[in-house]
Length: 118
Image 1 (cartoon, rainbow, N blue to C red):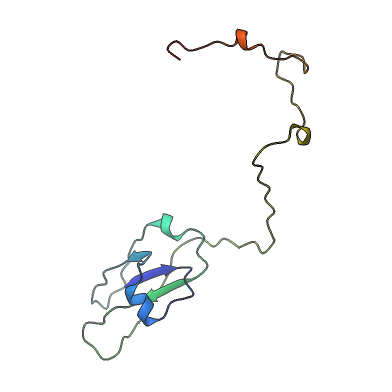
Image 2 (cartoon, rainbow, N blue to C red):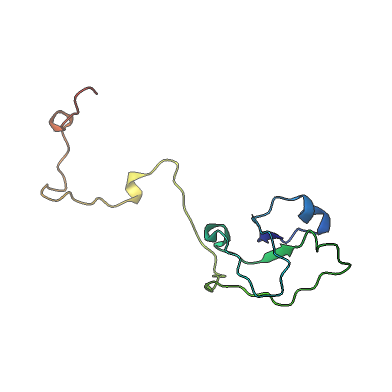
């Protein structure tokens, strides 16, 4: 079985060809079995597509039980505003005084300790 996360563009042809988020080898068994997955691949999952590649030669595929474990996290529908600065404008930022120095103290490069060999 192939598992695809957040892929609404799949049909049978593309699912058979596409690289799955995770692939599970299912046992032909009537018992309830757990299949652990790599959790880091399923963070921020909005949709999960299951693609069963074969069904051991049967004419139809029958799923008796399917369960999922995990924690629900509500998604935020609010827009997020992000500002990236390619070159910061000092006038846009307030100065934070360095502890033990006056706010107007300028750093003298000759007093900065240097590493040997640099």
